[in-house]
Image (cartoon, helix red, strand yellow):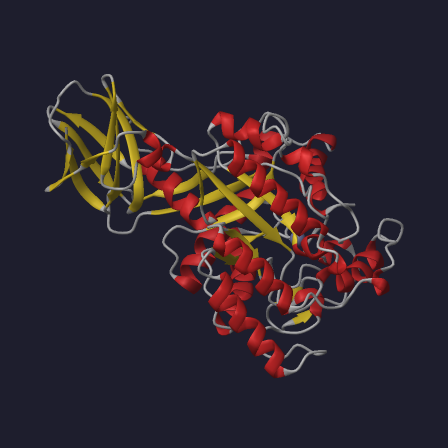
Length: 449
Ligand SMILES: [Zn+2]
């Protein structure tokens, strides 16, 4: 069973069990400012965000090789892959090749680093099977090459057996209730959830990595959503003082919105505003599968003419087009099938769409938090903002017939002849419709138009 389908199937099982689906999946949004009339926050620089979510990555360990026998202990008929034939390592030479290719093209996203992958070793201590020097070099590669363009997430502690955070050992019971992917998170209180997530985050902090969010392994959290949201908010603030924590739990490939959901907002006009953002993927793993044995298909993402496939649909809706893959499938046991599909996808997207922008998940989370939570007041000569969070490239649209160049605070903004060249500190007019892009500071500020 594919990792991504587990994400969906567990959502459906709520219905199958006859539970109240809206109660089980209810998202507490928290506070919202009053909506301003006549001002609309649009996408950053009027572009559709793109992002690439990579699950199941870590240092050196090929998770598929090590997790399959552990999954098979609980689900013997479902996990019959010949895991011993899969390489035990995804080499750093491949991380470098992939990371450099993406960096040259401005590609951004999320890269999981599982702290205790399939219980093989602790990334902040030892990784049996590899030398200490190899582990150090691998972490250094993540820090220097990946971290600038990719959010680093723990995908909980092991992605397999749940860990007793009091002892650091896996629980002895060998059932799905003690697997992170399946039952472990069910029934956990927000505090218990925060404790578990903080345990994972601290290992990565010890290893010199910074995180502002988490990724749920498989079905983790799907039956304890309120605790997942609150636990993420508390754990990321506690361990990393993250201002806007976020998490990746869901992907939808149907008609549902894939816009991020800003949850548990509070204290919007005080000194300690809070929220957590649920980031939603818009594709299945159509690259190389979670086990590196399931070839994907680029046409499901985008066809050669740029008209078919999932990405054009989502881009047309103006919602973030966030693709989802698994690292073993990108490497594909050295064949790089997933990587090749991704390369072709990127080439096709850029050939057919220019109003797009690659963003990290944390950048998307910040933009959506500012979009939803900034109070805006239309006044005579412009708009007043009360922003709980600063936001680079904040972009608004309003009606204005004035022919004076807009000013943001004291700075006069520059005209952009087309939307395509809109950058922070500039504006574009089309008829009486004015689009303005600027770096929004935290707190009070004013745009004069
Ligand atoms: Zn995973």
